Length: 293
Image 1 (cartoon, rainbow, N blue to C red):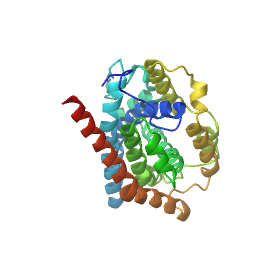
Image 2 (image 1 turned 180 degrees about the vertical axis):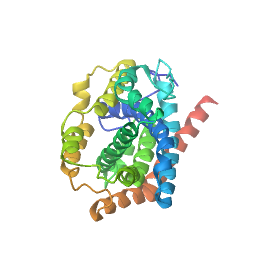
Image 3 (image 1 turned 90 degrees about the vertical axis):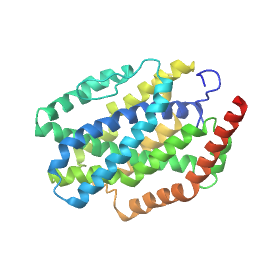
Image 4 (image 1 turned 90 degrees about the horizontal axis):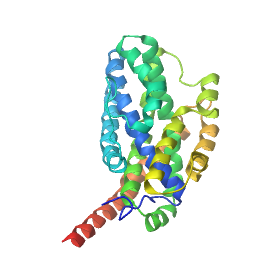
């Protein structure tokens, strides 16, 4: 398979959302390894054995995600990822974000600075909170009701659709763990007025990371776009609006309403959507193998 030949990046209903999803894959791989680094230093401070077990399960899922995204990202990236003393896989177009927003925190953690560990665990808890809402939008727009049949019929890349669906389902499943870890260790809520403003309403570097990777992918795929168009894609627009609607001072991933919605999407993924998508992926593999023979 080669880019520009038989590779179709259009896994979603529109080109810009498809590019955002492909770019998001790079950001997700990066952040999973960041979580892995931070976890090693955070675990000694988790005194609750039940929570510690949840954290270990959370991290296992995250590293499975990183491995899965690595295959797609390696295929798409002309420049290989490099490693430094703190992070094993940094793509060149994410280097400036790494140097500005992550490496100083990771270095501080390695030096034993509690403030750095707090910054890192807060960053992860915020990411998991926002990503849960992103996952709701993903399933709502692409899978709920009659959307699933329409998405499957029109998707140009069922493999990417499956990868993102699998990842978002597990994000919904474990998103509360990072929040619980932060609040257990530091005995304060993740969300306050200042953080709602800076992380939800203001432009945040995390959004720019995925958009930068998406723009890189667009250039490599020969698609004309820019960061403004990508940020205005339906997925990004609806996600931002829902984050503003849901994430406030009282945001609780385990409230009855949130938990009901989380459980609904995970159950539908396990029982309906995942088996159907997996069958389509296996069918395409068989067809490609037969064509080669």
